[in-house]
Length: 256
Image (cartoon, rainbow, N blue to C red):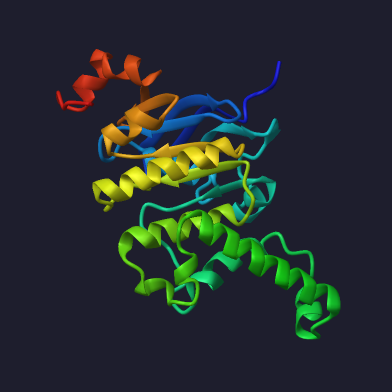
């Protein structure tokens, strides 16, 4: 039996006496789209930060592709095949759209600074390959025509797509999307839905945090619900919509 792509066991994070994440456990199967939802302050982004190495956990374990990654630094986790975006878009404002994506691909580069400085043939070949791969990722998200624009000149929705393209340039097997639909209008979210499904169809597993319940219910295979740092429910979209604990946590909001 194949092991989960990601397995989280009793994950905890404490900030100066406040337990932000308490004994959270879940797993993701390969090729699955799993969503984490919950009210503001439920601990969703904190879980992302713990999984990606931005924060060290207070307790618990994380296994990725059947190896322990608890406490590893972000670059080490990225090298293993995990990539993420952020709730607040983080782009390099002094770079073009293309250069932002190339930064993601450079994480996989085999040549060193000396080879690059000397313009050695193998470094030039690899740089050409990095550029071509970055252009492919821009085409995937529909931004190839903006390749030479300044990254911060893009509308907000396109900046989110650019961040996804940069993450994809690292060739992840698991992609974490932190509120990818925030600030997008309905047509942009429909495009995001198609993009996420196409990424999954290419063999990438996806974990996302999102507040738009219509988007989540349409796209997720399974959903984990957090409230005050604890997991209160897990199941299919239909099961989550009918769970009284989830309805209570959202104060009776219409989850559809």
